[in-house]
Image 1 (tube, rainbow, N blue to C red):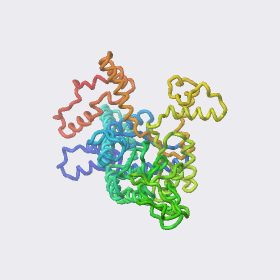
Image 2 (tube, one colour; image 1 turned 180 degrees about the horizontal axis):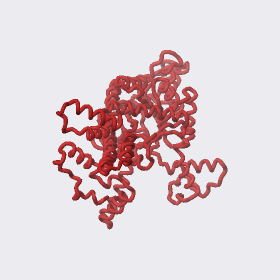
Image 3 (cartoon, rainbow, N blue to C red; image 1 turned 30 degrees about the horizontal axis):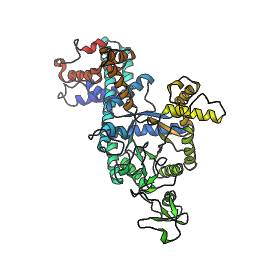
Image 4 (cartoon, rainbow, N blue to C red; image 1 turned 45 degrees about the horizontal axis):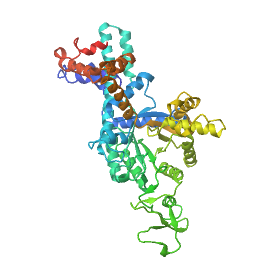
Length: 531
C-alpha cells in the first residue's frame, strides 16, 4: 500500500476507536508502516524469489542481463553495499548479496576463525541472513525517514508542489531488500539435516540456497585439495529436501543452486547403487579408477570389486576408505552432475573451477546445454584466483599460439610489476574488465559473485589506516584517508549517529511523547558539523 492509502486506512481505524486512540497520529503510524514494509523473513523470501525468477527470464531473453553480487559477513557491510549501489546507479536491479559459508566460518564462528570445512555452527548461517535483512530494512527506514522529514518541512512551509513531489518519491521508493544467494555448504549432515537448516534459512529470508555435492563431514573449500563427492542419488535427496522446505513455507518459486566440485575432486566416499547397466549409478561408478581382474586370486582382503563396462574391476581404495576417480575425468563428471541436477529439481548450476577461463567454462556449459538448453550458471569470481597472473598468462598463450613474439615476457614471472604498463599487461586488464560480460554471453553465466571481497577490503583498508595512524601521519591518516573522503564522496556514514538510527529514534520519541520528547539531534549534536 502507498503512504496515502496507509494514511486513509489508519485514519479510519483511529476514528473507529471513538476517542481511545486520539493520542495516535495516523500520519505518524502510516509513516512507520511504510518504513517497515517487510514484516517477516518469509515476506522477504517470497518477494525476492519473484525478483530472481524475473531476472532469470530476462537473462534467457538476453545474456546481457546477467546479475551480480558481493559476499557479506556482516549486516552493515551488506547494507552499505546496497546504499552505495542505489547512490551510484539509482537502482538495485540485478544486484544481489551473496552469503559465503567461507566467511561465516572464518569470521562468524564462536570457535574463532575456521577453515571452510563446515565446522562452524550451522545456525550461524541463518542468523547472518536475518542480520543482513535487518540492516537492509534499516536502510529503507533510514532513507524514507529523510524523505518524511523533508515532507514535514514542505508541509510546514506550505509548498504544495514539493509535498506532491516528495509523496511521489515515498510511494515509488525502491527497497534495499534484494535476493541473497545463501551457501548451505553440503547441507551440514544428511537430507533431514539439510531440510531443517534450509527451513531456518528460508524463514530468515533466503529465496535462493546453494548446495554442493561434497560429502558433508568431509567438506573442503572448493579451492583446496581433498574434496570428496557423493553419488547423484545422495545429492538429489538433498535437492529434494531443500525444495520441500521451500514448498512447506509457501515460497513456491524458491531457487536452488546445485554446485558441483567434481572438476577438482578426485575422490568419492561411496560406490553408487546401480540396478542395470547405463543407469545413473552405473555412470557414476564408470569413473572409478581400478584394475581389471581375471580371477578371485587377484582379490586381496578388503578389496572391493565392481562390474565396470562388462568387466570385473578392483576399485582403487585409499587407506582412508575413500575411492579414487580416474585421472582426467573431472569435466565429464561435471557435465553429468549438472545435467542430473537440472533434471532433478535444481534451477541454477555452480561449477567450481581452478581458474577464471571463459573457454573452459563454455566448453562444459555447451555440453550441458545439449541436454538442458536453458542451463544457467552462478559463477564464483573468486579471490582464490590470482586474476592478474591468470589473465596475463592467457594473453601470453593466445599471442604465442598466434605466432606473436613473446620473448620480452617471462610467462612464469608475469605477476611482476614491471609488466603492469606493457601491452600484455594492459590487454590482460581489458580481458579482466570484460570477463563477466564475455562469460555471460559465451558460457551461460547468469550470476557473477565475488565470495570474499570485504574480507580483503577490510584487511587492506585497516592496514592503510594503521600504517599511517601509528606512524608519522597520526590523526591525519584518519582525517585525510577516511573522514575527508567520506565528506567529499558523499558517504552517508560520515554522519554515523544518523546511520545508526539516531534521527529515526528522535522522530519516534516525538510520536510517543509529543512536545515532551527529549531528542538527541539538537544544536549541540556534533553531527551538525557535517551539514
